[in-house]
Image (tube, rainbow, N blue to C red):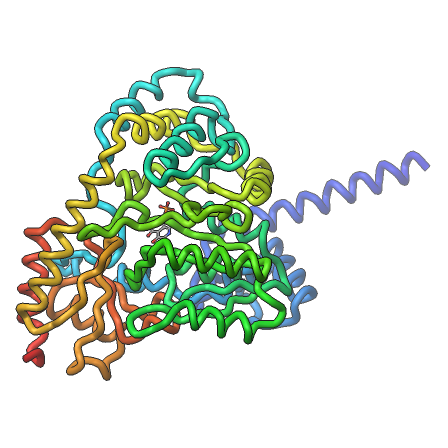
Length: 459
Ligand SMILES: Cc1ncc(COP(=O)(O)O)c(C=O)c1O
């Protein structure tokens, strides 16, 4: 008996050694490439992984080939349009071209000095190196609710109606997880900032596109979208001033939306990323300014554009207490909060540099004028936007048949200017390109001259 057990153990150890040597060989053998697949040794780990996948999902690869895993959620994603244009830009720069990058809306204006100094000071304190609160430390939530009181005359409870997010983008994405699931639907403007479409889709919900932009009556389109949708959408996504179309709305529009939401029992989610970017006397309204809005609405505010603090990843969800609590609960499972020195410096930005957004706004206004006036002199007429840090430009008629992607490629190649093709923002974006005002006026002047030289068909 004992002898049998010893023999079984010996054989087991022997088998392990053989397996181990196969694993080592698989790991050590450098993979070769066959087509787009990596090819490992035909025994051991790679083999077992192939067999396991075949059992799960049937054969779909040549023997000896390891196909990268089939992933969930991201498979349907088209290449991120900004990524496609980025690749072209990098290629041109490698070839020695000076490309003026008006494609990616990545703010170039420095963050407020007081915030930078406070960050450096706070990081020295070891107490700030620990996990922080995922909802945001109390003084940070107080600072954002104070800002809302000062700027919009809106009273919010920092304990129940405010939660920090890792920028508006993360806040929006995870908010969709708690609001939507398979079988649900959301109404989303189209064209759109991509996560407004993909956030609901990642959550498993359906998206109904509501056309927005020049010559569109968004509210009428929304009513139509609502009537045509079954099941009724649980969420309506709004975002004004709007990226990419630069469409702006007034408080009356927001009031109609709140009335609509109340009547139809639907939640409004307003991404207010361009809260402080309004020109020529236009002041973007907060959805929460509408009396009673917090019954049916939440709003995302971010320091990214207003305080030019993009890399700091500091945003907030504000408004309806139940919805704020739901996101805070999910976030408490997902993250441990933003690095505390960033939270502390963000408090200082809002409290001690409250006029910084006005300065930022003035910089973007100057750039907008330089671009739109310059292009008009070249024969490309574009309406001046009243808000955002973008210009949404119709592809000029002589180039219309190219479509926005080919036209954007032409601008990189011949004008040395990178823009975002409208088609990347959803079906409603075709026929337009988006300029991001993230280079200084001198460079924008240079871009205009390049465009004038390149667009020879303009009158
Ligand atoms: C509408 C909109 N929401 C959110 C963001 C990203 O904001 P944040 O940096 O706060 O994630 C952007 C950035 O371009 C945007 O245009």
